[in-house]
Amino acid sequence: MKLVQVGAFAAALVMSSVVMAAGGGDKTFARMMAAKDRSVELFVAREQARDPVVVNEKKDEKTQDL
Image 1 (cartoon, rainbow, N blue to C red):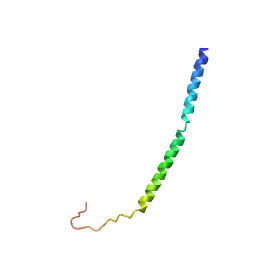
Image 2 (tube, rainbow, N blue to C red):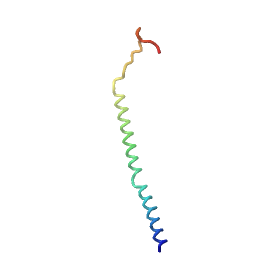
Image 3 (tube, rainbow, N blue to C red):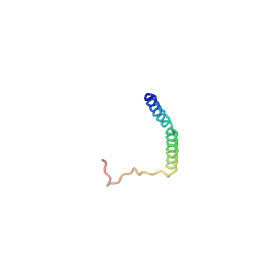
Image 4 (cartoon, rainbow, N blue to C red):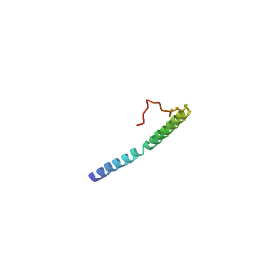
């Protein structure tokens, strides 16, 4: 009888860990990565829409080469 109880307890522990492992973590991670990808796309689109920064390559007499 004791062996049956120990076996049932072990089976319950194994089953609960398997069920909890597939409890939706993958779905949550996939949604998080999709949201990150979308936000990166929006950021890139917003940065490309801005006016470009013009860098003056002309050096004056106070500017020295490093």
